[in-house]
Amino acid sequence: MVATPVSKDDKKPPKIVLIAQNRRAGFDYELMDKFEAGVSLLGTEVKMLRNGKADLSDAWVSLEKSDEAFARGINIPVLEGSPFSHEPKRARKLLLHKKEIEQLKRGIEREGMTVTVTRIYFKGSHVKAEIALARGKKSYDKRETLKRKEADKEARKALSDGMRKGR
Image (cartoon, rainbow, N blue to C red; front, side, top):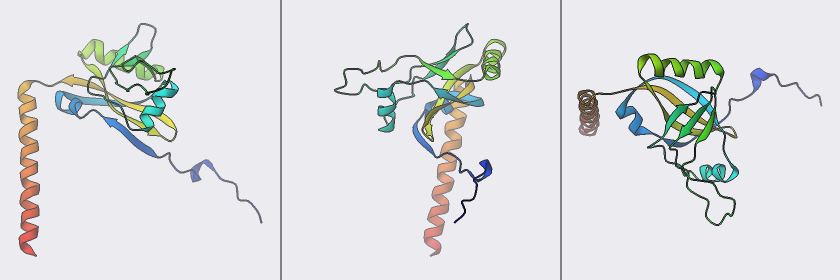
């Protein structure tokens, strides 16, 4: 029996498992460029994320002068009964390329944007965060978004009602 060599092309893409999503970010902000960043975590934090426990509602990204990005406001609950647990809302370092950090800085300085965390997920065995350059929406933009959502909901309901009556 001869073993066939496996090329890199034959590799399957890593499985993506969503841990938490910040739906509020899409409502409060107009999301522009999105980036995928690795997240530097402690062991107890990874254990809690495997249980699906995380809150991104207050999450945002700060850029330090030393060309580093930190995710702040991500709430990962403390592992009960562990003497070596972590702080729930500590700043977590994001692993980004220098070009990506420069692009984020330009967006913040020139265009007055902010950087928010939109999703956190497992990609294979690694924890990744999706961050986005975002511009704050005005109140009338938010009302427009709500109207559009309501119209879509009514259209879906009308279609499903029509399908039921047609049977």
